Length: 261
Image (tube, rainbow, N blue to C red; front, side, top):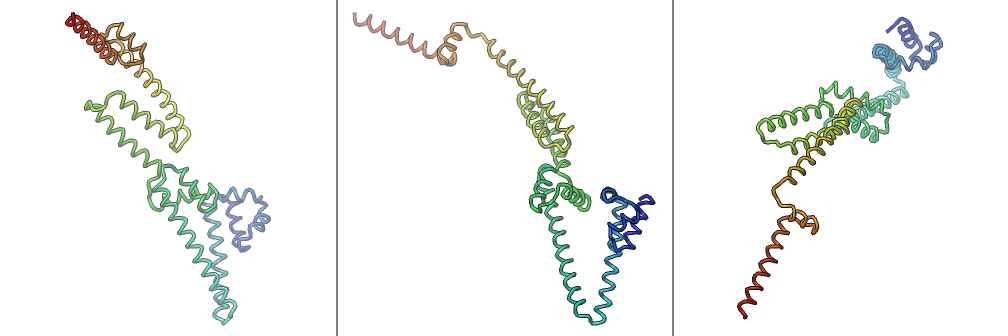
């Protein structure tokens, strides 16, 4: 915190946290004050000024209560209820965010759900997310996804080395992982890399399918059965069975005709 900010905090303490007055005394624009509030050291000084003001107000109220001022007693009770309600709301928001972090697949899904529940801004939800992760030592959805992906990659590598994972299945699994990364990765650069990998895998799968089709076509089956199968829209084996049945029927008919003579 620089000297100008320190003087501003001193003005806040002296004016019972009147921000407009502190801005005027220090020739600071309100816009700059809001920029300062993003700085942790300044925010800490601001919170200190708020605490000083609240402590002085509480001290003055307690003097009135000790003097048997009935209205002061009523106001104090009201203030306590408001404080309890505020603490309950904070606790509820914190717990909701904890549940979302542990259950959602992405950070963006956490923030979106939180904003919908409490009708808040994305910035407030982002701050709550960071605070809850730090305070409770939680694993973020992105960290969980990376850990799960790493474990899956290791398993797939072991299966491939043991000869349990053939090329078609391996490409299929890699495609599924890349599609998930392209959709759910936390940073745009990661999503871009995953998208590029999807395109490369798509090309590999297409080349593999062409190779498999060519290998299946390069068998020793004669050309005429292949043409028959293509013409009738059936398999070579089906056409051969039909042809065999026709020949058998013709042979039987000839034999029957010979017997009758």
